Image (cartoon, rainbow, N blue to C red):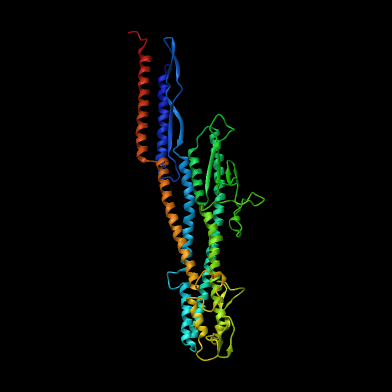
Length: 490
């Protein structure tokens, strides 16, 4: 026989269950605009039935409803794709920004550029060839030479500053990775304790996923979540975060309650090899993967691209100096043969940062050679130097510029390649923007809170709650009839 209060117990379970569903819906609505929040879904299930005996056979009688689980509406595959594309977006977005900065450093769209200074320098020699005895023309050559060397030095300094800025960003990003790793490890511990106790800590999981999303912007991330074999009677998970190249087996950043750190700050030389695990005595490096994450982008730009820009600038400065010096040393001035260099180095060998006008020429304009003899009007040297604007003239072509038809051609090719690189980075970044936007929308369609849907759920659960409350009222009337109406003699 069933208890007299059996119906009340069913109604009570209904009230409690619908109240939980209403609370969860309210939680969703409250966090509709919370970044990283995942919509929670209440899964209801019928409680275990009660067996009753009826006319010689057993029947199962339902005992009501309870909350089975409160789960997050999450798709692991979409999360995986989102983080993958976010890493690629971070790489190309960072690369685009830095390349555009480099393009701005060269400033080739204005008159205050290296190509403009080169042109003015060659033109000043052409003017001097037309008036070899004119001290004013010689003064212009000196000023144009000083402007040219200043442009080289400024470009070299700005590229070096850009490298220093990127190096500072690398250190910040390595520190961020270590900080995220510690936070994920702490959340793993909290989540596992809750799961061992039989809880499902959805909000803690949201915090962890948000950290992984942020981490994916800096470096490629892969999450591996498996069942902990130590617990067979409940769902307890192990959570692992792997960074960088997925083909490598030793790139685990967080493994449940174990965390590894990167060297902070990393060494400033050695290219990609400088990112190392701090807990490895042998200095094991982290394979960051190809074109994934802001950190890999910064390392490539700092150690490869900007170094190559500096090298090309040094080659250009050395090429200009060698070509001009070779011709200038064959000349003479009014006092006789004058085999001095037109350009020298402020220290060491000639580079973009050390090139300068020969101090002797800077203080004495008569030391500028215009011809090969002392004869008045000899302009062979000035003409040969001015012709370097379009070709190599009698100068020996430097081996480092063997593919260029002239000094200007070498520089133009480098600037053109920079433009191509900027366009590529912009195009790739735009493509990744589209993919990330699509995946974000797909994510929102699964995990995002729809206020219309939640309002519908409010009405649904509220009506169910009212119905359960009405059942309590009905059972009260029935019990009142039994208690106050039955067994009374009239």
